[in-house]
Length: 305
Image (tube, rainbow, N blue to C red; front, side):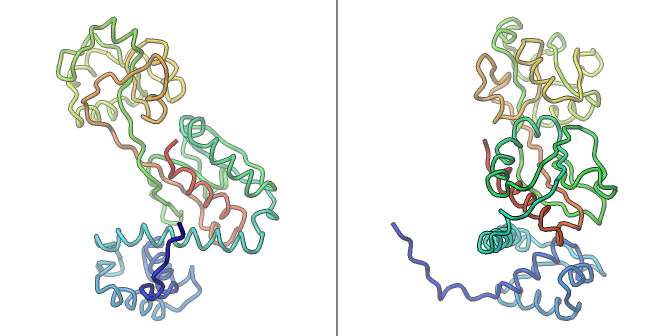
């Protein structure tokens, strides 16, 4: 059934929303005004007009620094979606996506590359077949400033101020094990003595131990007893070891919940939420090829598999 829009209720100006969006992404009026090609006073008036329209404060101003208020953070999600939709409409209307050609390099952890990127790349190939894609599956943070990659998909927001970072969503992670291994160790509870349980983790396992303690696992003695019998930087290796009954490992729900012979080790234990960030150089604003790939990745990665 066709849904009738109440057009008279849509009264704000997209230019005001765009001014707010770019200011939030850039972090200051001066940087946003340069990105949009506006004078700083003009940009400031546009943001102030949007605040007046909604009768809320969108930024807290401390000297030259701008911080989003709670209302600003809530509005940002919607305005980002509007910006991405506007880009897609423009590309579709002009047929630019089909005609754009060139090479784009994407770097991601091996886990993200193997489990989340295929559907995104399929969509990209359908939308912009002239773009070739190189994928670097690595846990090393590639330096976008030195052009080692055009776009990065990471679990940590970059600290470099001249990179554009967009939060996509959280990935829900839990401890999983092969059913055969859980049967072998007697299916202990999260507060039981776990010193004889084998865990599979990353070389920097202190971080993982801290996260597991935070969600309620009895982990304090494990780091001292060498419970991490297998460590690997490679997420796909960790997953393979778990599937083969070698111990417990932290795996994304969307990967492990549908796998045969594997189950949640502690079903009632709270999950670990890990963010996904999409990162690009500021060239994103002027390079149509990178913009197309960035927008398609943004839409695709936001959807759970």
